[in-house]
Image: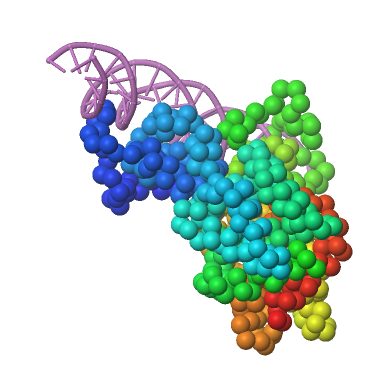
Length: 211
Length: 211
DNA sequence: CGCTAAATTCATCACATGATGAAAAACGCG
DNA sequence: CGCGTTTTTCATCATGTGATGAATTTAGCG
């Protein structure tokens, strides 16, 4: 299963950069740090924290593993830097809250899917979602961060009884959508187009918020 | 973070069984195999596949690591045996479909939460869900299973246009609920009581199915 | 009782991992 | 040009991992 990861270095390995050899600085201005970050994001998004090895990331970036430590310090720091939010939560909150109250559900779904549909956003959100679900310390921190940055403020503006329960019900539906569409890629949700999903989900979300 | 797991063998370690020492068969009829499985389930449910080490499982079961290989063969087999479904999907389908059509949503939620609320079911489902979330590869495998065992049959009985889309929307909400309540443990969903959740979710589910 | 089969531990192997420190090569400022 | 700084690789460590085979003890059948 995941046990024996074949290095396949012999024939088909590392097609990206041919293996660089001699030590020392490279000519030109290659954004090596950025390439490492990109490779790290991909691996964290695809396999999660525990199953991502620095060596694999380095190989993917066409770089020696020690360089990761040089630039980032360690696996933890690499991870944290890979996972910066692709959005500003406050701005998102503002966008959502700006408009008629009976279309709240639709705006929420639209913004949420918008973030996930952009390639960069999707990658980061996948990494975040995976890390939140894994039971590490970072996960717990993330969770509290999400609670404080999203659940609380939105609940406060909503001004209904049970606001927090309602908001977390919405969160559960949104997370479920992300899980099935982007992580599990369950058909036909994975292949449906965004407007369709919005049309279907908006009423349900709206119902959770104002019932 | 996850890097340095202290073995804490010195003073506080392994409170369960005192360290057994001499080799050879133990007297009495201890269900060692079962204890290994229980420990494995707990670890797989709590930390996922990659972050679970056989040595930790063995320690938790109060047993030498080699015994795991003796009983199960390897980590992969252990995992597979830990993850058997706690339910018979066909029976569940029958239960859900038996009753008035306009209470379909409520029955689905009730059955779903029922499985997750039982301790044994919860542990296995957590292990499964966690493994799905933590790696693309496992997710892909699971996807086919879910599609064939659940989406297709249920859709066929539903007899509405768009049945598969509707059913997978329901699935996304249910998975989202499991994710937030049992894995992420996001409040207040995690602490809400079951009847409340049923009351809130049933209409949304029903809406997805028959709108 | 005697003997085979099962259960259990121990001592290892081979390998991957994260991390570190030193050395080499190019850059860029003076 | 010269020289410090940055980027890069290499060699290496200590540790943890999954796995294997031999050794030891008990159970259980005849």
